[in-house]
Length: 176
Length: 398
Image (cartoon, rainbow over all chains, first blue to last red; front, side):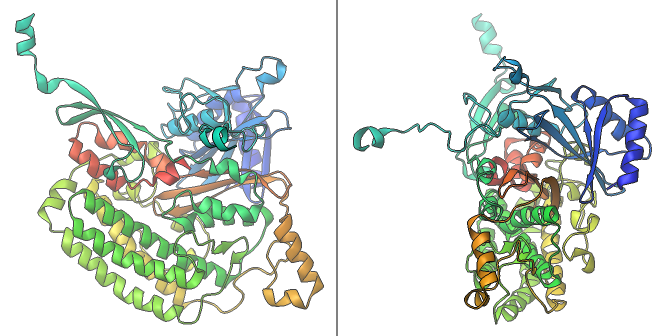
């Protein structure tokens, strides 16, 4: 992990290259994280991967989290790893919920990083499946674990546990 | 028109075939939509989700300690690894240091579980290739490992042995003797497996030079574990990161040279021997002392204290009813599972239940490499590659 000053140095360098991209830095429990604006995602990931002295070239994991009731509500996490220095850094792209502005069907959008990291293909589909976050430019953005005709985004915090309708109601009708 | 039909080349016709989800060679419920030209695979799409049970969502409704048995059931062959990834992430969130003895005990059970997982893999994959006797030999040793698990934890699988803060119980009397007997036998057994397979003409023809993917491509696809090591990349989180007691132990990281299915087999078999060495060292150096941390805010008090100490009783009651609260924060903790990097992401919002538990499952990520392994090869080699990929569908679908 880069230490806290190291993280601030990275932030300074990204600020020079991409002004306004980094919204915040976090260093807690020995783990470094960068919160970024989603429109700068590809630029920041490219910078972290390409620029000399950083070279976070391996995407360990891509997952999302719902921070309801915080604003912006969603974040897509990119766990980057430099395998030579054995350093991890987390990039969090913060996404507001467009449905909050009245249009209930609107989904948050972010650029896909499949071209840069082919490993993201399944993981972005999984995030889409469970959070309804659309990855622009993904080659095959469909549901992956849930059935294709499923309605709703079950890993969102406002989706109730046990909110699944019962498909087989034979017993209910006859003996209920 | 009729003439055209007659001269049509039937072998170059592309046919889409559905394989699975219920097919013994798919190691669970994996469905493959395969485009075939004759017997050659031209395109392949894995369709997954048949055993998706929403474990990650269910975890959000359970207090932290109740999540442990849930996550064990994701990748049902490497349950100790699932527990370690989750417990380790929560321990790092609350800043709980676990005692040395617990670290050693965890290593012992993790490495036994690695051997167990590789035995299941070897038995079933050899079965796919027609070597039925391998299954019986492998499951014979697997049963001895399960007996050891049962002796120490009370359960053969899904043991719920690891707790946040350490392990639930110390190992019983007689366990060490039984474990040492197993450790003496196991390297001999591995030699027997190799004697059966290493110079078996059928096995060699099926595995050598099939399913090759370059090291660079595997890294792009995020593949980790034995698959990556078989292509010559010595990447092992046990060596790279400092977790549990692994830095203390002397063990090698087996790597392949070609990256074909034969190398994948050799790497895993060599890993079993290395795991035996790790367990031996962990057992030899097993320190005396507590097996679970002494922090009453997170760890249940010993049973004997409940009848004498009011304070312990209150702690016990609080821990069992509400559970402990974890301050806001998030943690990604990754360990080397038998299939690669198993990461657990836990988001805490300050309540007694996790706001999100996510597993970066190595089977799920590695499955993306299956297309690269199979395109252009015969359908029989595809079956071999799938076995060597070793996906556990419970982990893929969660």
